Image 1 (cartoon, helix red, strand yellow):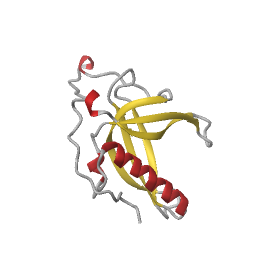
Image 2 (image 1 turned 90 degrees about the vertical axis):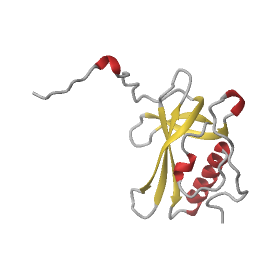
Image 3 (image 1 turned 90 degrees about the horizontal axis):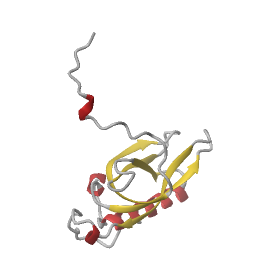
Image 4 (image 1 turned 135 degrees about the vertical axis):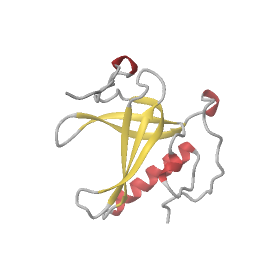
Length: 152
């Protein structure tokens, strides 16, 4: 037997792992991590977005950006996507991904079928600025350099 001292009344129930419906959501990046690709010859940036209002408040969706990839086209797509994220949160030059965390933005989420399992999953397709006038908790805008991270 194990001693726990746990009160279930103080814990929110699990919100589940089913995909959220396609649509636009106000979110913040709450985590970011560089990971090795399956083949081990590249790296991708995994960003965790958390919806901060509405019916799906607290739900998370992920984006994976092929920042370092043998396929130059995949790498350029990832860099362009990262630029859109930077523009949406108004941080155009970053030294570390934590600079993107906890800054409100609007994400457009799509639902798609995974080829390997046929399960429906979420995919973030569009990143847009969240209007600071409708979100008084939004952080102050940061001065930015017009040259985005990753552009050659």
